[in-house]
Image 1 (tube, rainbow, N blue to C red):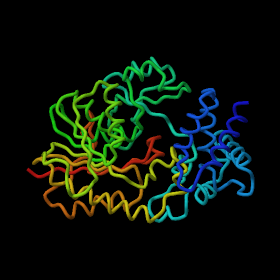
Image 2 (tube, helix red, strand yellow):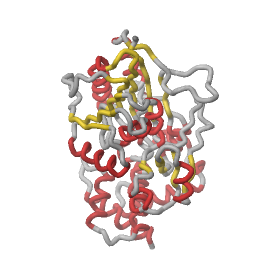
Image 3 (cartoon, rainbow, N blue to C red):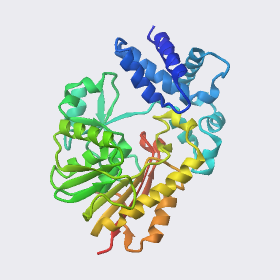
Image 4 (cartoon, helix red, strand yellow):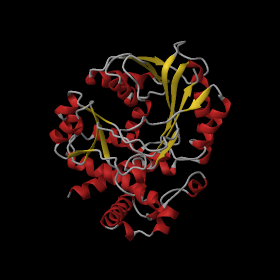
Length: 385
């Protein structure tokens, strides 16, 4: 019954979508207007919308929206039961636009990962991951031992339940934030120390700002800037719930005119990007992102890095991160920036673990099929003393 109702609600949402409308925003507006819907129906409707865009190239364009949703759900169920039931050649040809293969390395494992439901990751307060996982029941502490680099992230928890996390006592008391595992690794790459001064240049709604503040044990200060005041207001509400206060917000449009003359121990440039690394979680974006977007965003990313490089203290660290996998936005930007800034030198992205590997790279590409999370590129430099 819930599946039938979900297909109907999903079809109504799809009919209302304009060419520029985001499906996740449409879902929120629809649920606000239909508050009577049971949590099970809401969840099923959300899954139906995302399945629709995940399997869009397989659907009959002449069928009604509801029929197409039902086709997508059938394909999702078939794939979940047996991933091999959808041939690798079909995934390669239909799961993403053709231009993607020229921009990044594509693999059968990546295509399969894109068609799965994404994992839901939480970031517990420092040292509280085991207690949080136990209190939420359907949750487990992250195990990253399979990765090709060695790192421990004791605060990452994967949630596998169906309850509304926003209504839990643990969320209301600030015991966790919903934050993808790849984003959490960006905070660990920054490795800010208590008492330092950091700048999160593209803070958005503050997920990484709050992680930096937590890692700094509420000591020192994190500057959080964004061009949108609404996002910074959301950051303030989130930080208040988590009882974090070692931050300050400032509006910055990303131009050469910086918001402060402060020199920083560390700067994080988590730049706007094409978001290819999030296509498992946001399948609609596969069909709205273009190669022209990649070109424009790579220029923006390089400009942001160039603007802030002079704000580092001697020996200060600059960390660049983007949740995409395209070469032009990842290694292309990093190489162009490094060539223009001889005053900076590459430094290991991740701090040494208790059992360090022989070589700690200055950039890493986290792939969704390896991490079971968003894709992410991280690079790091140090200002020469």
